[in-house]
Image (cartoon, rainbow, N blue to C red):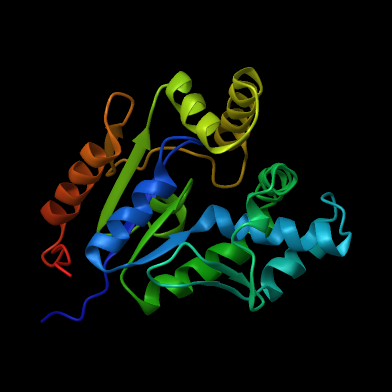
Length: 225
């Protein structure tokens, strides 16, 4: 049996279905699920609680380096310094702050170090916006999930209680920030498999992703229990 650790890198824009699908295939493969967006949200939450200005790059970098962020295998649980913040980091105020925090180069570097540390400890499915290009450029499997803007807005509308036009505007703004930032912009890695999920069910996308993983790894066998 091979002891080689496998990293599955999943990138894509907001609302493409990364979190849901990464969590599902991690469960099927028995890998650790790592939501890098949750890490930026955790730093944003800590900053908001501590009264740290989102313009204070030095202090935000300190928080990012000091934060103890953990993911619990087999669950969506996110721990920040030992506290379960799974729900708290999904609040709209935290989401907005996280998008701004993620633009700070020093914060990104600090969290990339933590992400790589997690990746060396276990086989994992890691999702975000710079995983295949920056965090794990040598990942065994790279996937870029996408969907047309209307579909992404519809999906997000089912998750949050906001008018559709507000969500559409937020996603458009997020896309602009993600793609235009100078540090680690959202781009598809040259060797990533592109998958448009617009007309597919979750089950169909899951099967497509599992096939990609199996095709690119020697031990991407699905768990049977």
